[in-house]
Each structure stands twice: as C-alpha cells, then as structure tokens.
Length: 346
Image 1 (tube, rainbow, N blue to C red):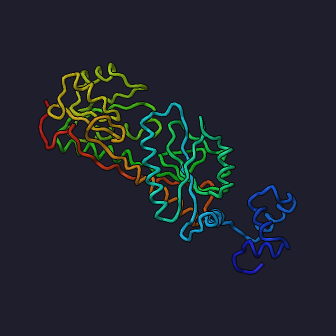
Image 2: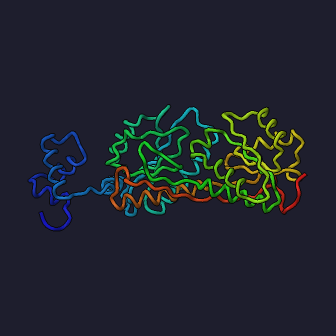
Image 3: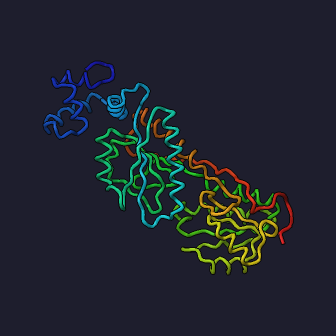
C-alpha cells in the first residue's frame, strides 16, 4: 500500500478484486462470498481504511435526482408511544421543521421514520436506513426511556433532541430548563411577585432529571424576599388537587405546563392579571393566551442537524466515548396573564 490514505480503488487493486466487490464486502452485502468479505475487511483494517458514511448516500441520491448540490440524507426518528401526551406532537413537528430547514441550507434532506407501537421495529429501521445509505439519525424526544441499542451504531451517527438517552448514550441537544426556570422567576420577582408556586406532572420532571423542580427550589432557598410555596407535584392533574393546593398555599403567581390552571385559579376568585399571574412552561401547550416560555424547538432541531452533519463530515460514526449535552435557554413570551409592572398582588 502507498503512504497515502487507502481508498476502495487501492484496496481493490491490492486484493485483485473489483471495486464493487470491495465496496459490497465492506457494507456487509450478502452478495459477497463470506471468505472474500473476511479477507477484504482484514485488508481494510490493516491498511487503516475508513469508510465515509456520506459517500454512499450522496452518490445514490445524485443518481436519483441528477442534482449537484445534494450532500446526504438524515433520518428523523420518532418514538410511537401510546402513553405520550398529545401536546407533544406539536413540539415534535416544530423540532422536525427546524431540522429540515437547516438541513436544506446545508445541502441535506430529512426523512421521517416512526419506531415502536404502530411503527417499524428497531431491527427493521436498521435495515431500512442501511439500505438507503442513511447514516445520520436525529432522535426526537421520548416520553419513556428510549432504547435504540439494537441499531448497528457502527454505521450511524446520532443526536438526541432531549436531555438524556442511555441506550445508547448519544450526544444531546435540549432546552436549558434549569436556566430558563431561574430566568423566569427573576422576571416575576422584578414584576413584584413574592409567592411563586409551581405545579408539575411527576413524570414530566423525572425524565428531565428534576431540572424544573430543582431550579424552582434553589431559587426559593436563595432569593431574598421570596416566600416559600411548596410545589404541587402529582402523577395526574385534577382540578380538585390543584384547587386544594392553591387555596392552602396562596401563590400570587403560578408556573406550570397546563394553562387549564388559569380556569381553576379563576374558580377560586383569582383575577388575572390584577390579583394573580400565570406562566406556561411551554407555550406550545397553552390552550388560551398567557405568558410563558418558548423552548425554541425549531432552534433545537437546527442545532441538532448542525452537530449531526459535523459528525458525519468528520467520519465519526458509532457511540461517542464522551457524550455531550448542548443546551439552549428558552425565550420569554409576554402575555395577558401577568402584570406589566411591579405592584402588590391582592
């Protein structure tokens, strides 16, 4: 072999095989005799050959589209989960729009897949992606613990668009929930609120390793002039539980994901924004106008795409040795459920 980087052509010349046979052998094609495939892989390993995961997808798509700007295909994989909240669908759509937009700008396109309940199996997904030459995978958030460990990750690079994934442990891009909660509370204090209250669905906080609740409690403990209101954390929200908590603890502003709480507050005599306030922790979930946090799913989708393409361009497939997490703070959205300047709540 020469001192230059080995190629399919140079491997084929040394082995006395066609370039197509060498390529098929390295891709694991059943068309190649197993003994020949072993010989090819051994020679490639000894020569230090590294396959570019973008090359196959690029050539395949160019042959189909006859285009000149196309660089590759990425997969956006959603987990079809029957117990996932319906409100998550809009958030996922926004993530995909962000990923598609940025991918197009960078010369890629995104194909969507669904796995799990009413979707394809992980094994079938592996076969589809490899047959189409797709080596970049964007995983959308899962409500339960996601498991894509059965994918042949030697063939793929992946990014998870939520806080943590362990099967396998991949790079992640997600909202900075902790920082966003602190920023929201600081804004509320500046508006004169002194008894902020938080209500959460237990699983919603657990899957983020309690970052909403942790930030809220840390703020209560360290912010002068704040009166402590215990958070309401339940498995499933009911008006009865909320009203009981609201009347007992008397928060002057409430933070939570479900804007139905505004109705429940008003049923207790609250007048928003005159006497009380409300902040939605994800404005995509609101069912009526209110102030809240935009978790910026389109930006998260775009950033995930950038990181994934960068991995592919560096020829980095497989499970990373040191998975990293990229966080993006939420954007504040004003609304009619908060007073516009500091004052004293009734």
